[in-house]
Length: 265
Image (cartoon, rainbow, N blue to C red; front, top):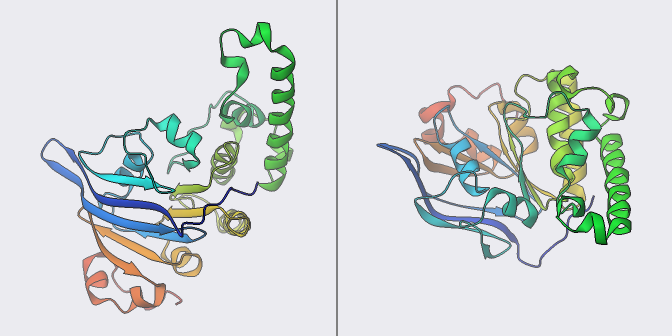
């Protein structure tokens, strides 16, 4: 599951990005860089603009101003499926599997570039389709083994626990062989044991070369696992730095984090 690499240290760059909804400015002239191979944390209160930033980066929403560079190439005009095929994937705060489909079928559906979906291929390339389907099936089983979901592969996705559905979200995006994965609150509603398992899998993927950008309100998780940390408030980036610098940043603490004295550095 190793991701391809480029020589450029900057994996994702956002320049002066803005997104408006009528009179509301959800993302306000945001600029940030995500370094290749990092696990970057994105924090901020509800309404800070984090999820809207995610949606705009991956093409689910169109920016009103600014640019987005992935591997040095502009992607702000691409559709969500084009961004996914380029190697940039996201998960959702509330998992969105196909609930009546099995866990395995959810993964198979997420595989990009399926030849069987084209009009003439089933007629003129049946062997190629069969080979590709076998490859996708093998990859899906490898991913389910990696994310510890093999034993529930035949269950309908709706029967999974909240933590298992978060693992399913991660499993589905891995089918696209992403270079960079953006996770939206992966620990929300997940018990500590499954949270630890999820973070273990994230670190294993990171060791293979996959970059991560993680929105999370669990500050203990952010402080322990993310470097660097980016903070947003009112649609703007107000801090970028290490966990230790975040703890010592008065502006950050006064803005929305409160007392962080109990959070390990």
